[in-house]
Image (cartoon, rainbow, N blue to C red; front, top):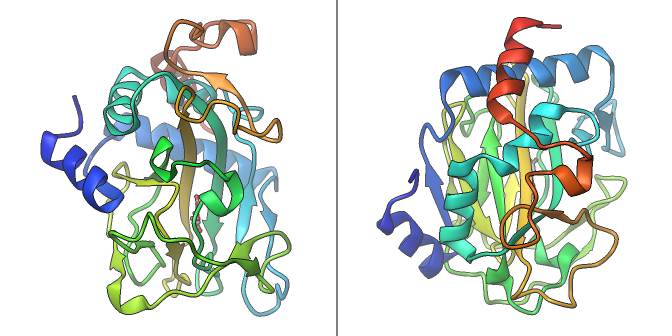
Length: 260
Ligand SMILES: O=C(O)CCC(=O)C(=O)O
């Protein structure tokens, strides 16, 4: 198992935890190549409202674009870890990539995921945020507010983004999650989080994948979201949803063998 009992306890107590080197170097190298391919094909969209000033590129969903990311939620270490945090049966409801270009990369303002997903229990859902590149304060890594996941935060339209919402946070209580590429942050749907501007000279990408405990969230998962069964009796390794069993290792090798 990739996550320790202390990390699981931290998640349950304060609503987030981080796991260093969650993915192997070859796995994160393959993810990086997928991001390069998307950028080459101009798939990520700038969602900022003032692109002359700052830009925030987003690609959503990923599973339609990438067999690698289609398979990733089914990887045993992902299933075990997410299951240890929120319990089984798991469904994946969203996958997306954020890319902050060098110098002009714009952060994503403070929000909780539950402001989008509306689950009665904010601990019934978790986001897995994967550092595709080394993520630090200078390039706007993920920030979270520990221990605030049961509070209700009012959200309003984010005027810097064409579709996001945001809340206001007292930043003094926030923690920056500095993560090397391949490391991961897990935070529950109630945890306020944000990313900062990328002031560095290199672009920085992160992937967010959202999971829900289907039993705890029964009747509350909107049909707006994906519904990919990852664990439990109805899970089929992707056969039901994609018509074929997924295989992450196969996709890692395929991507590494044919870079864009
Ligand atoms: O990477 C980002 O800029 C934002 C990620 C995020 O807020 C999310 O996945 O919910």
